[in-house]
Image (tube, rainbow, N blue to C red; front, side, top):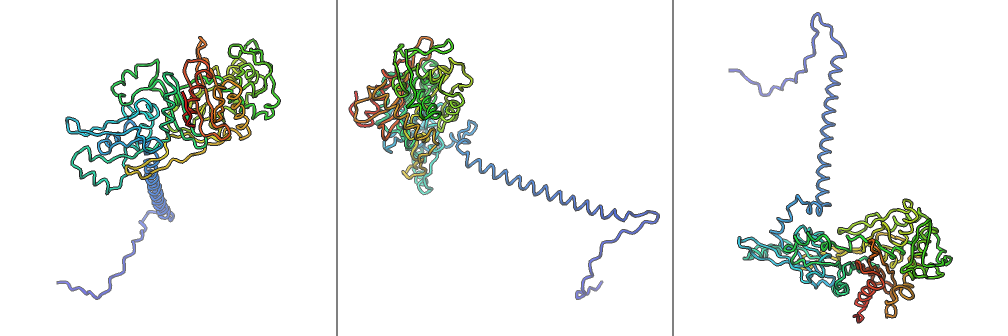
Length: 519
């Protein structure tokens, strides 16, 4: 049996055998060095690509995580994502309230169907009054219901509260209550707008210039969101009235003489002294290059300055300004400042206003543009934003519809504070245009608003839209003149003069806001 000496130190590790020369073969002395260098280079390449792939994988993980967090609402709303349907089996859709946090605009009732499944029925207490702005949750959704679906379908109750719902006996009572929206909508003012519009077709929007809060929004014709599923096929087939269209944000109309606000903003940017120096002798018609523009009913305004031209809505004078005074390049810049052909700072769905820039227009086109006709088209929302900026020293606040998001226990989850978009004009220009708009009420086309305890300012418009000389009636303005609290924009489709139809509607809304008696 072999003997082992455990105390003996282990032999030193053997050195790697050195290559021995082979008889008759000449060895390249640099061959082995090159082989070693190639091995080191290969190892370096492997390490480089391993590190690169690790960094790439880490960046992809970071990107997808960031996207999932930042774009969670968009991902949630994607048609291929059915998580909203899954959440409706676990959470009860949250409620929508008016600005007083008490007036309920939309709520959910639950019950069990014949198969033992929990069903949610959305209820709209005011029916058609808030139809377009609050919207509906079925058939693809619209309005606040659709835009804030993510928040309404999620429940931010603490886990301890959710356990209490889990322990309830009835399945429909186990649903976690979703979060609630507190909107900016004033229920009294919304009703005043809705009632003032009567059976007219058109739109009304009321905002707070200093904050951008939307206090009321009405579009007519309207519908009852409680019956949306039953009436869906009929509403879709009704192509003429466009009942489902929110005319405030998605209706494009020629602005008519309300566009003269834009003309004044531009001409005051170009020449601040023009308010004092400009004179025009109105004969009722302006002619240039074989083309002509006439004042309403060919009225002769006589010798007028800029304020008088604006107050009496003298088409001839503004056609003269457009052709002979306004520089096309300057006007194009002003239009971009005022967000024509641009995105608006508004979150919910809307359409962009459109206009052909002056340098692309003929003399007739410039004359038509100067009085808000031709190819120019605006939404009531956009016109209200420009008017609000005039009322707010030239500064536009982003219009918004939600003040706060609460959980089911009333705790504030999120507050939507007023946001500045930026200055659309200088304060000097806004002051001058405000003065012109006040003259419309005291001496011009909106004198039916004069003589009230509050002082209003505004601009009327009558916008032709077909070959039969049919026209839409416009009014946009604010009150009080010296410290504006609300801005009101009214459009009435196909009725004629703004002074005859839109101004009385605006008057009822102003009266309601200032707590006056109105008929």
